[in-house]
Amino acid sequence: MNTNNNQKSIAIYHEHPDWFRPLFQELENRHLPFVKYNAAKHHFSLAQNELPFDVFFNRMSPSAYLRNNQQAIFYTSALLGDLENKGVKVINGSRAWKYEISKALQLSLLESLSLPYPKAVVINHPSQAVPAAKDLRFPIVVKANIGGSGAGITRYNTEEELQNAVNEGSVDLGLDYTALVQEFIPARDGHIHRVETLGGKYLYAIKVYTSGESFNLCPADICQTTSGQELLRNVCALDAPKNGLKVEAFTPKQEIIDAIEQIMAATSIDVGGIEYIIDDRDGQLYYYDINALSNFVADAVNVIGFNPHEKLVDFIEKVANLKLEEEL
Image (cartoon, rainbow, N blue to C red; front, top):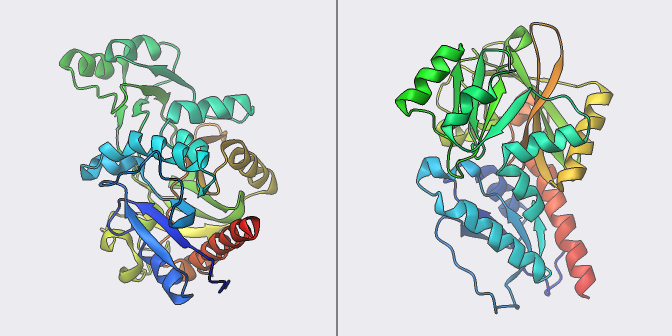
């Protein structure tokens, strides 16, 4: 730990009441100075250049609107840009946040990198849903551009179902009136794959087993292994509602790790996760979600064999020390 008296606090910016307890605990264990900022009730001065922190860790979530904190989502874009203009080192900065709050941009990036993703069309009005699905294979999902925690995703099994939803006015495009009309991919062996990265590099991977009926696959909400072992309740987000999801560790092939690190480099995501799926119909791999808000799996030591929050704080401390060296 750097004990130089010139060291300023590390800012942790978030609005979720529970997800980051393990991070705070690890920072406290190391006696690192940090301050929490509530993204839902925040202000900043454009003229203030002397700030009480050198490192700002953006832990804002696009699912904030589920907690009535939607006002923080677009505000965060302005805040991060201002901090970067002032020379503050931001972990998961404005470029990472730009991809976090746009599923359309995520798939556009995958297209530019020639990486496979579920076929999709972007729309800005419900009337465009059926025409957009014209060349897609049903079932499809309509997926809000700004989601998080599986929110804003609705499955339609047939064109008739989709047309009825349009006629009834029940197709919701989300906060920015933008959505994907996307092919639904049935998961081979009933699971998706989530790969976590730190500093742009592979950290660990898990398989998340799902019924296919829920789209909330947040690893911090999972509290059971595939063997049926209950994970420690006190390390699960929101005391881990028993959602039926199960998880196990695995190691992806090197070409998948390489592709994921390529994605992280392109998005400037310092701490994040990528989800991919294997189509049960033909075995095709698809990358489909890029997460700048990465929630580590609950009770990680029992699942993956180590505590990722220790490595995360190693990374934060390294960034803080590098910033301090620049100032000296």
